[in-house]
Each structure stands twice: as structure tokens, then as C-alpha cells.
Amino acid sequence: LLEVTVASVNSGLQRARVTLRDRLGERSEWSSSASADERELLRRYVEAHESADARALAELLRDDARLTMPPHPVWYAGREAILVATKPGFDPAFGRLRAVVTEANRQPAAAWYLQRPGESAYRPLAIDVLRVEDGLVAEITSFVSSELYGAFGLPR
Image (cartoon, rainbow, N blue to C red; front, top):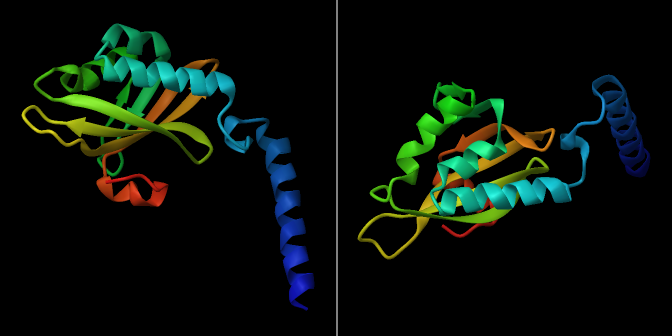
């Protein structure tokens, strides 16, 4: 009976996935992992942050990109607004950023570590999950919580 139930559930899930693909179309969320193009975009995103290069970051963002930071009830709409919001993080007084590249919900992501001025250790800062459209970053969801690092198997 248990084998029949498991087989029924698996069959139902497979049919549901096909139905979702038919109704929603192909989306990056359905792929098994980030594409080579998405990984390259993520590499450039990390490089822009680690070198504090706002111009390089701007080149990676769609004009209508959006930045959210759950659970904070704030968002930034548009490339220019995102650049204003990220500017303090590029200031040397903020510290130095380093990233560990990862994935979240099958989307490219970067786990950020911050070394504050005068400190030797890098500490967890945020995990940025990127939604990519047409080769550019359409949305950044930045989870500012060190508690998530363990769920990703990342060091704290």
C-alpha cells in the first residue's frame, strides 16, 4: 500500500509540473540549476561588489530591476534607485565584501561576508538571490540574516 501511495504522489507531482510549465511557460525556476550565462552574470555581479564598482553593477541591472530585502517592508524600483541603495556598501568605511557563490531556489545567489574596518574576520551579511531575465538582473532579493547561512551549509 505504501509503494502504491508513493507512486501515486510522484505521478501527481510529475503531472503538476507539466501543467505548470504548460500554463506558465519555460522559466528559469524550472531548470535544475543556474545556466552558464546566469553563472557568468553572477560572477560579474560578485566582482562588481568586491571591487566596489557601481558602474559595473549598473551594467548588469535591467532598467526596471527591483531590490527587496525581506522581511523589511522596503523595495527599490529601477536601476538608479538600486544604485543609490547600494552606494553605502561600496564605501571603504563600510568594509570589504567577499562572496561565496551559491544557488537558492535554483537561481544564482551570492552569500556575502563583510570585514569591517579594523577587524580581521569576515562575518555573514546577506544572501542575494538573483532573478535573471534577458541576460540581466531583473530582481535582487537580499536576505539580511546570518541565520540563513546554516541552511545553505555556509560557514558563519
